Image 1 (cartoon, rainbow, N blue to C red):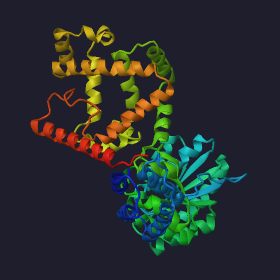
Image 2 (image 1 turned 30 degrees about the vertical axis):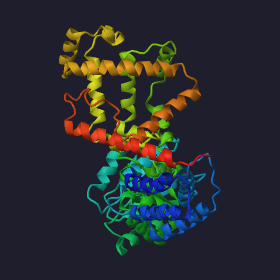
Image 3 (image 1 turned 180 degrees about the vertical axis):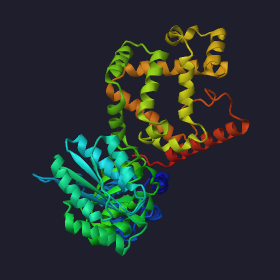
Length: 494
């Protein structure tokens, strides 16, 4: 997500990092690249102009802090202004004190409107509401059936009728919702491939006859400025109360997320980050900006961990670690817990430092590596997992045959585990402050060494790196080392 704008902004910030100090010349050059990055990310031109005026004025008046590197101070300015650009944000929905609250979702065809109706209904149901979905999209083939399927998955009522008049469908749905005691009615209205008079006329009639309490525009974040232009048109006709940005997980540019609030004056309420019905969440600009600037998303990582990690198992492992115990059984259990949280790439993208390394994994499939490592461990006996030092040549061959790998892969895993186990045991004895220092240090090493790998290429792959690949890796490391030395040399002493 936001890969394009993240890379372009990182390139702009490197202008300040290389020079080591802020001057009028390099500040202009760096900010010019920031402007180019935003325009190439499909951010609205007027929004970019106003934004650049503000950060230029702030950067020019910044009192430099000697303990903080110049690019970090510029990043802080850009971060704060980007957050301000997309806010203020209020993800709450105003519900009627009595009767049924009617929420109307509108948008172009293909924006994810029907799925967003289901996601919103699930979110509200989890908050204690009793929603009913209304299949008022009578234009798109199978739209009614799709909503019925979604309602069935959620266990929520769906109102539909053999009627060619969507206004009548919505009116009848309101009567039925009151009869069934549903306190929230979510209208899935029709869309078109583009904004036209027929579409707007139908939506205006629904608004006039049914009088929805709030109207949300659903737009595809991947369409950039087209999404913003559509939001403007819908807002002019319906007076929108909020925007739901969909497909944000596939948005490499970020133009819609950065522009829609400023251009339309309509706040973004929710964002969809996937196709599953639980992938709708409140819009939080500071999290999005952190991802755009390559700072990761620790908040989401913590949330995912809280939802997926077995607390009893985590407590048991912590007790073992506190006693200096850590074997391949513990390692396997950690792999299982990590797999529940998502792919390795997703997890890395949320961790500051490591997120900048995730795109440098190249052809190595980290998730396949995880599967192979787990396969090797699963082929061991309980005794071998608790005592890896017992694994001799005969045992290696048997384990390798069971896992479908080479015996050398088993040896490589055991050696890596020995080194990792020593580090984990040392971490268990550290104070919280020392742990943070150690982990952030690892993040910096990873960020400054794109050629580094999470897993040794030999383990689980069944093949060694070619001479060409080894040479490429060596050159990358030499390049990183030269850059590090240059930055150290150019950094001013305080």
